[in-house]
Image (cartoon, rainbow, N blue to C red; front, side):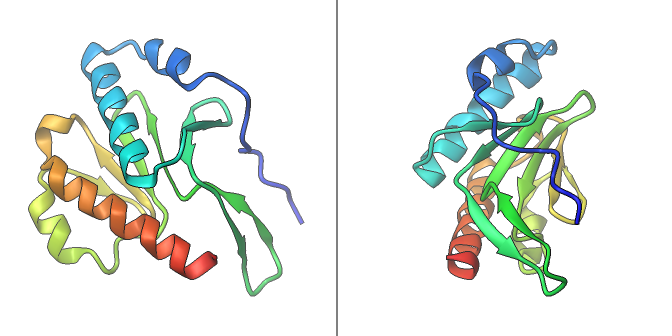
Amino acid sequence: MTELKTKPTEKNVEKFLKKVENPTKREDSFKVLNLIREVTKEEPIMWGDSIIGFGKYHYKYASGREGDWFQIGFSPRKQNLTLYIMSGFEDYEEKLKKLGKYKTGKSCLYINKLNDIDLSVLKELMVDSVNYIKKTYT
């Protein structure tokens, strides 16, 4: 079985964010950092070179594959700010309608800039997702 390449590191989160070239994305990243810190009551940890994760949980699939992952996280990618909402979006249809301008992947929420969305709705999504992970995996 292959081992996950993305793991917690000792890298400094704030140093990483200060290197984000786009000033709007850098400012938005610090806002998201503080928002997730508020929601989780956890300190951020760099996972790999570019993901900031909060909290931790252990998963085990029916296939036998298992590992540790963060409860919620984000990364200031070149194209957008990517938030990792580990519960996925299946149960959040109504909230997503109120969020604003975004795109989603399986567990990724892609936002161009925070001005495009309603931060109070984003916070609700974060709280719901973290609560789901805690309930499901602890």
